[in-house]
Image (tube, rainbow, N blue to C red; front, side, top):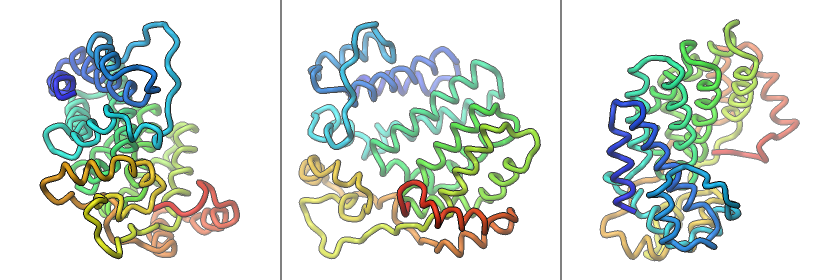
Amino acid sequence: MENLLSLAFDNLSSYDGPKIRKGLRQVEGLLANICLSRSQSKDRRMSSVAKDPGLNTGGESPPPQMLAEITDDPAFYEFFKLQEGFEWNVAMRLVGTLDRLLARGADGSNDLLILSALDLLQGLMLLHPPSKALFSREMYMNLLLDLLEPDFCPAIQSTTIVTLVTALIDAPRNTRAFESLDGLLTVTSLFRSRGTSRDVKLKLVEFLYFYLMPETPSIPSAQARADVPGLLQRSPSKLAKAFAGVARGLADGASNPRPRSAGDGETRTQEEKQALLGRHLSSVQELVEDLRQNTPFGGAVG
């Protein structure tokens, strides 16, 4: 797997559009094969990624699995371990690629590359939640906020909003970074702009509902356990159950303490966030009342 990631990283670090596209397809192929049914052997999956990354061969695809079903898969286990280190972390490479793509300016082919990179970032943060910690840093959170500028097409704006939500789930520290960088001003300015498309405005309303929901702080472990990594001890998310099958192996293979989870950080109450948003939007109380009556997203989100 290191060889496949090395090839993809070489392409992602390029300034040449076709090479970047190839690198994105290689990452997409790797992630797709990890998430597919184990009816394919590991060797077949890896060879298919190497030969035809990101392409559908026309045959019937194996059924996708739920996350809880792939945690005992050797390929997923290996991928998760590699993401714990700086050298093989895919999310870090993708944000670097996005930064270079932004510097190239807006054009059709460039927009497609940005969309692909954002889609992959969403999947990576769901497969490896600790990678969300990148967006607690201002330089990376600013990258997402830059993509919400009016210069970018509605498709990029909409996909960025979804990526932003993914980065903020179970991550109060990332939410605080978003707020400190005037993310609320960016979002509300885009919402009020007459030039913003209807689809983007709908996404922004969904984002504001999400932002106003009560935050769930990370749950600290009452007693540290050597056989359970820190991620599983702290995370309140149902996703923690999905990693139960690899918990022991990850702990045994770690020679250094696990870095702090992206979920660690100060939380704000709904009232505090309502006051912050109220500086930029007059109809916040209506949103809160609707949120309390309808409880979208199934309840509290961190």
